[in-house]
Image 1 (spheres, one colour):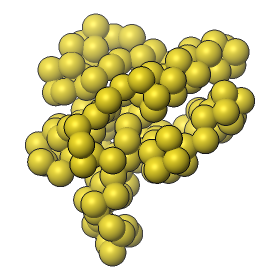
Image 2: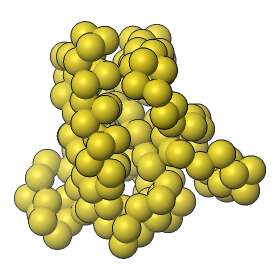
Image 3: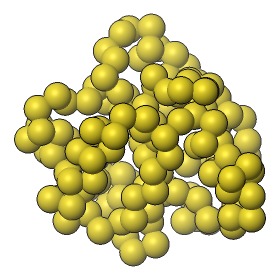
Image 4: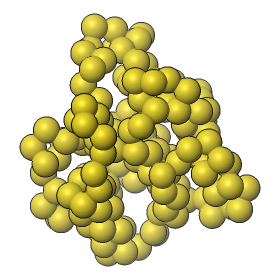
Length: 147
């Protein structure tokens, strides 16, 4: 898991801190790269704007994507990820507080690999993070060349 890193697209600092604490508590040693809005996620993934010059061939092993984001919402980020051959096969886990049926349908319609409603309780969040880390970083197999 040493070269596998997670891209967390999350605008809420409290949820970001919870994610970091949960990954640490679960001994998930993968690097966590955090971007705080949809536009920043696109710039990071495609080495644009403030990330111009970043090696665009170095991609996250999995993206944890919030839906309710400033500047560009999660659905639009998901559409952009899936529309580009460089990023189209990166697993995207929608991690959101929404449990609206329309959000679930749209996420799968536009290529999400998973939809998880964020647990509010810290211990439940830790357990969900443990399961997500174990699955997406240890059990799941991605195509050769993705990472």
